[in-house]
Length: 112
Image 1: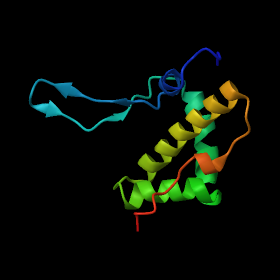
Image 2: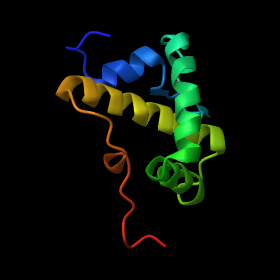
Image 3: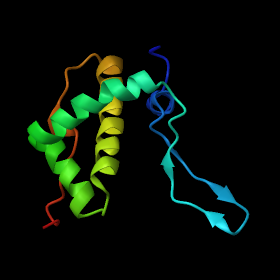
C-alpha cells in the first residue's frame, strides 16, 4: 500500500467503509460494510482482529465496549476492530513507530 494514501483510503481499499443504501423516501436501510475493496486484505485482518479482541486487554475492552455500550453485534464489533487495526497499521507505517495498544482505546472514567 502506498505511503501517500490516507487512512480513510486504506479503509475503503479494504472494503471496511460503511455504505448506506437509500432509495427515495421508502427505502432507508442500515449502513453496512461496502466490501467493495480487496477481500484478501479483509481476510488478512480478520484473524489478527479476532486474536487481539480475545488476548489484548485494550482491544478486548474496546470490543466489549462496542457490544455492551453501543449495542453492536459481535461480528459488527469485530469489523470495527479490523478497521481500527488498519488505522493503527497506517499510523505505524507513516510514523515509523511500533504498535502501542494503549493508544487503541482509552475507556472513559465515567463509564461503568
